[in-house]
Amino acid sequence: MIDLIIRGDTVVTPQGVGAHDILIAGDKIAAIAAPGSIAVPDGTRVIDATDKIVIPGGIDPHVHCKWHLPNPDGTANLTAPPDVVSKAAVHGGTTTMLDFTRASQGKDVRDAIEQREEDWHGHCACDYAQHLMVEGALPIDLPGQIGEAIQAGFPTVKIFTTDITPSRKGRMVDFGDIWEIFQILAANNGLGVIHSEDNDIVMHMYGKLIREGRAGFENMAEVHNTLSEDVSFRRVIRLAEKVGAALYMMHVSAATGVSAIQEARHRGVPIYGESLHQYMLYTKEDYKRPNGQIYHTYPSLKGQEDHAALWQGTLDGSINCVATDEICCTLKQKLQGNRIDDTTGGNAGVEPRVALMYTEMVGKRGYSLRRYVDLVSTNAAKIMGLYPRKGALAAGSDADICVLDPADQRVIKAEDLHEADYTPWEGRKMDAWPCLTVLRGKVVVDNGVFKGSLNDGKWQHRRIAEDMLTAPRL
Image (cartoon, rainbow, N blue to C red):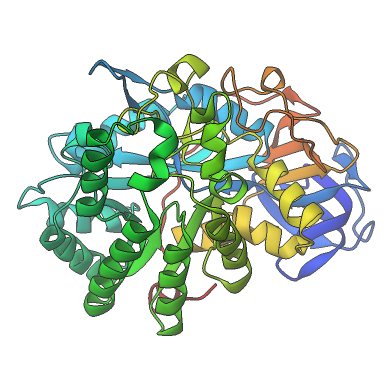
């Protein structure tokens, strides 16, 4: 039985952009049909999306909810939980988020997964999945547990090549252990999701700038620098290439990282790149603005040439996804550190991401709607093992839908959002804003009114298509 029809004249499907009726039965798309070609059953709701843009629900592949947030005094808090972040997500047209389970936070990997699920089940208004995260010195039995977890629907494993700051010792995984994990990934159709910086260079620069009395956060780009990204990316890529493992490079911030990915793809290495909206729209000069910490996340903002390379990467295939690295905290917490070694990372950005990228890609840079949808939804689904269940308006796919209204050209204000009490996007005018969000056939936001529930979100079992892991397919 058809429960809902969304009728639009600009509907973005895998086949192209056109006028279609999206027929929804239960939680699935039953058919994509020519407008009015199928009779509307009695009692079926019809939503007119004429003069609007209908796309698959956004997918943010990199968020941190209810996450450890260190304070400069050595104490720590937790960031906002999925109860808050997921509601902001659906208000902004995002219907799936991927967070992280820290393998070290349980008796074993299975226990860590079960504990993390307690943070999400019944606390999330959108669908979700978890990357596994391994840190520090790895227990001898961990690789086997990782293999089991991949088969159980957790095919992505996050690895740090740096401790990030001097106070976060224990994050970095030694290169030999990375080698072991890569072998497990290759054998089990897993994907390495990498925070890649050269730890020696980063820690050397912390010491150098502190000795020179230049420890202000405005110097962050000198610490988390382009050389570090270059050296680390190429080392990790070389190892993966030898082992036969596939990679997803998280939060690419520099032209050197883009080049390393591009060269590897030309050799046939199955590697994909993610950047963040703040890296693509702000540079290290923005650190000098009042409250410049609000633009920061780790590694760091870079220069104009890096900015340009990231945008070019979205066109040549080096950058496949635009994520947020979501850290939802208060402005006070975001500003609590002002040194290179204590500035709060992450950003509250999951709500404006879909509209912001539409404005920047389609409105300002002339991207096609198909490429825009790839970068905010479809590519993440394909890379992370969710496609075609997610990321597509197609028969059989989950009925996850975002409708953008070009008539709503609002100016972003923190007071209008649902995440934090600040936004790094304050004052930016949008070319469109979501007016409808549908999650698996249920209208969860309608003209800014939340109609969903924190019980709506479901954990998503993932399995990455084998062809995505043997060569770069996007």
